[in-house]
Length: 245
Image 1: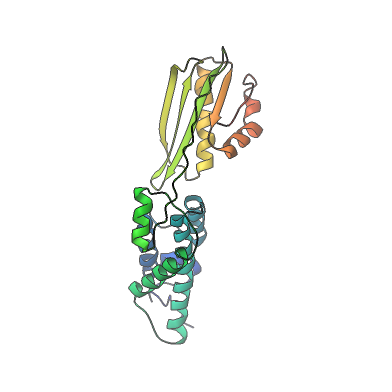
Image 2: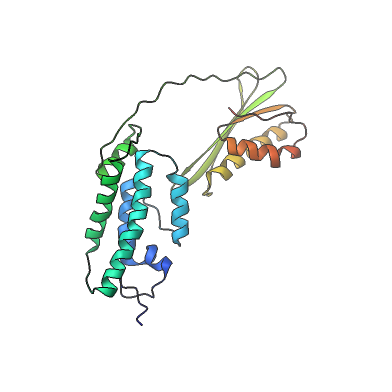
């Protein structure tokens, strides 16, 4: 039997080659990623591509749902094209496969009750996929910076993750809100939860270097806070507590 990939007819067919190392399937999936606004390099395995989707498209918004539908449709359409070429000796151009996928996304997203924000990125994704953007205005939420107790210092940390990499940052203040130290740095990590933990650890290291003995830490990731409480807090016995903002 011929073990060459029926889509590109040049390399040996494997699952990871078919999704998405083959020149045919690579063009299709890159075209989908471009519509989501991503210019990144493709992952080495289909499992890695799925993991990227889990991280970047985990919400139930229209744009995230569109990408998840597009991924499932791409797998189905490319596999069907592969079988069509093997068993029926017929073929479709890659642009037609892309149109099939976009139609799948359009028909499915417009049939679901999903909401998205009216951000530039979300509007662009809707235009590129062709579905109607349904915007639900968010209710205003007021918050304030809680003042620490006398002799206590407060550390606020955060992390971000984009296609090009990640970043961490934090700000350390006294009870009057006066800034003692600020840090921000780029990071090559690809997991947002790990970056959140790293931001907390970096802030604690700064506090220890300044000789601070009482620290109140706030982070916007409950996962990071819980992980830090269980694994890292015993290393700093002088820190009385950690709380989530």
